[in-house]
Length: 392
Image (cartoon, rainbow, N blue to C red; front, side):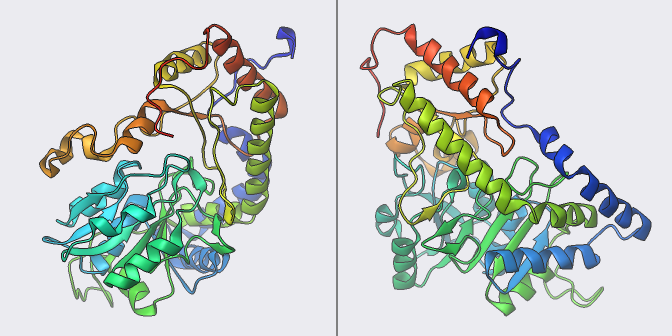
């Protein structure tokens, strides 16, 4: 692409472009809620719950205030608390470990697979103790964790499986969608997610009617019926405005997912055509896994990652680092006693990964500009074989 035809920049996420495509559908439903003056729970929320559950292929959906609460509420509903342990990954957004900690339970971390960045299922059993109550696999960046061996360990040791599907609505594992792959699943509707609202919001799905009822009760201070409190919950109600917007957007989700997957394929072709594959590792999609690409995360030698990000920023190309500090090295988890080197694959990923622009409206020209800019940066380095601590 000639310089005169280069985009002025490429944002990491372009929600304005998406809104323009659905504006005429969104504004009437927002007005419907405003006219109703019913802003919390109600028919919009129950409608969304039924529609998300049906989309996932599971019986029950329970809306809540955020994806973080969608992780915390199932732990509470399963009576997990002080003295218990929950196994999860150290390479994830903080909410995964934070929800465990808030119950009083102990997060027990297991390293990741370097090619998918998901929890290594074959390392889980060694972390099981007589205090272990649950496993939280995270379907990171939009690709499901390897669930069969995880469920085998869970069944063997009578552990609950809570899917952290915050980034992976619509993703599938051997034909089964997220939301159906464990005892309960947590989804986030934060605006950057594939199905994002106009603020915070979350959803839990389960096939267990008793668990569904308890989740619904816990999100309203343990109340059922009104002013009768069976236990201490907290306020995690989903707003009707968010539900109304999400019901419109859900109708477009599969089409948007197809566009994300097309963009991922274009990135692969562009990296290959520029001969960058020896220096840049691109996302690996495993057979039997349907990846929905909430993020398109590349991997480069650690010495290059931050300079590359600065180079792209200078060209007004948005990027992000998910996640620069693994959970086991966060200051607030110092009491767990971990140190550098405990989970080398997670630590290497934190040093080497970079999320490129990814959204359904991303154009071919924008992607060519992104990859061309990466090629330009790498051309300034003598050899792709320079020292690297890559764990892959």
